[in-house]
Image (cartoon, one colour):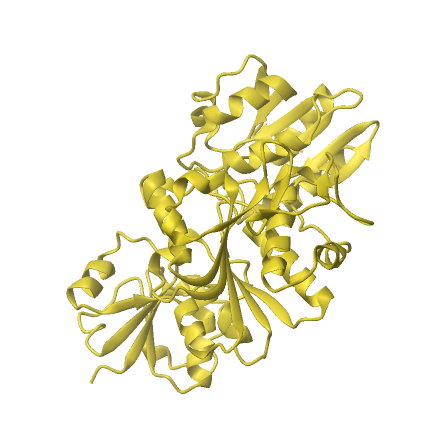
Length: 435
C-alpha cells in the first residue's frame, strides 16, 4: 500500500520533516546521498534507524512511497530522480507540507539578492505595528518548526531551488525583490532561472515586484511595482505617493524620515512599505515601524574605522549584482577583496565600477583566474592566499580615506563552510592585524 513519505536529503529542511512526521505519526523513510559517517553528530531521537538509507539505496526503496519531500540543494542528476520519475511519484518540498497545515496569511518573497533582508525587515515592521509575524524558509528557520504557533502573517523566504520543486504557490502576497545572474550552473540560463522566480506569482492574491524586472513580466499577471523612477519619484505598490521623496541617505514623508544605506536598501524599504500598503498601513506608520531595524551582519557591514581607513564586511556577496550594489554605496578609493569558490558568473559586468572606484583588487579563492579572464580593468591586481594575507596586503597598500571592501562576488565553499564563516574570519583578521 502506498502510504509512506520519502525524505530525500538530510539537511535543515529534512530534519524539520523528520521531527514533524515523528510528532504527527506519519510514516516515512529517509535517503541521503552522503555516507552515514557524515551524520555522526546528528540527533535522530525517536527514529528507527532502519528507515534510513545512506549513499546507496535498495531497489525497493520507492515501492511504498506516495510522496517524495526533497531537500532543495540536492543534485538533480542523481539516479534517484529518474527512478522517482519512472515510478510517477510526486516530488514536493517542506514548504508544500507546511501550507497544508498553516492557517496564517502567507507572504512569499524571492529574489536573487536582498530577500533575507526584506523578510527580516518585514517581520520587524509587522511586529512593531502590533501583528504577530514570523520570517522563515530559506533564511534558516524551517517553516515546519513553527507550525504549532499562531501568526497573523508568515513570511516565507523562497530560493529558486525551493520554487523549482514546489507545487503549492498559494500566497496572500507574493513578491520578487530582483532577478540577476546567479545559479546558472543549476538553472542553465537566465530565461530558465527567471521563469522559476516568476512562478512565485502563480497562485497569489496580491503580486509585487521591483520595477527593475518589469520587462521580464507578462502584463496579464497583474503585478504592482515598487522602486525608484528615472525622474526620482518613489513608487509604492503601483503608485507614486505624494509627499514621499528621498535624498542619498534618507527617505522623507511629511514629518517622518528614515535613514537607509545604499540604493539596494532603498528598494528593500520600498518593498516592505508596499506590502504594508496592501494591508492598509499608512506610510508614516510604515516608516516609523522600521526606525529601529538592525541590518543583518555580513552585508556591507562597517566593522572598523582606524587611521581614517574604513573596513567593510560584505561576505554575503556571492554574486556580481550584490558586489555592484556594494561598490555603488561606497565612495572612491576602494581596495576590493574579490573571489571565492567557482560558479558561472558574468564578472565583466563589474569592470565599469571597478575602473571608476577601485584602486586595487586583491584576489582570494579558487576562481581568481576565472574572474581575471573576464574583467576589463586598468588597475593593479594582486593575489592573496588567505583572508589574513588579504587583510595584511590591504593594510600595506592603504592610505588616508581608503575603503577596504570584502565583497567577493563568489560563494565561499573553497575555503569556508559558508559566507558567515568567511565574514567572521575577515572580522577577526581585521581585529588582529589592523589595530
